Length: 200
Image 1 (cartoon, one colour):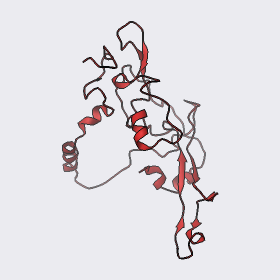
Image 2: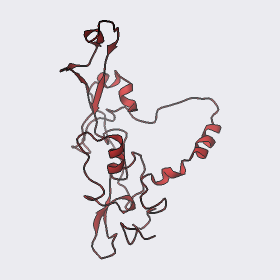
Image 3: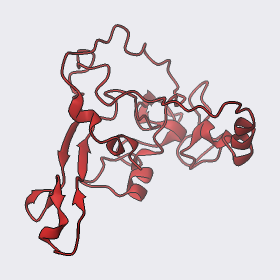
Image 4: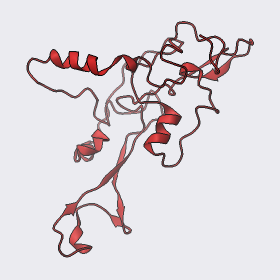
């Protein structure tokens, strides 16, 4: 399939399978009907978490650029919004608020990969010169650009694609985290607010 971003797709890729501008890849197969088929298989109603704790497996020996998440309270009029008694603003209120933020390296524990996580130098133009491209021929520096300081959800989707695992890539992926170790750093702070992990 020819496309405005490539003349030849990467060998073994599924570029164009779901349209030229697709950012979901094989997640397109997860339709409402497929979800209902999965639900029909439920027998006991048990649930379990597939993601790792944000600080696991710990350490950054495999990649020194990836650091553990940092959790802090948001700011409220220059003060930490932690155990904040709202009656300070309105004497009629009885709420006490803890409002947190997380600075998170997206590949430190469970990987929040997107199709823009790893691309490849590939001759998508068919002119003999490889160029840096990602899934569906999206170009580095043109289609894939650095995120803004505080991107909103719509900007994030346009710039980075939908977070997922197992994106199809033209080259075999290297082995993941073999021998990764967990450090001895306490993680109580990371577990105080379960809501921080859900990123609704």
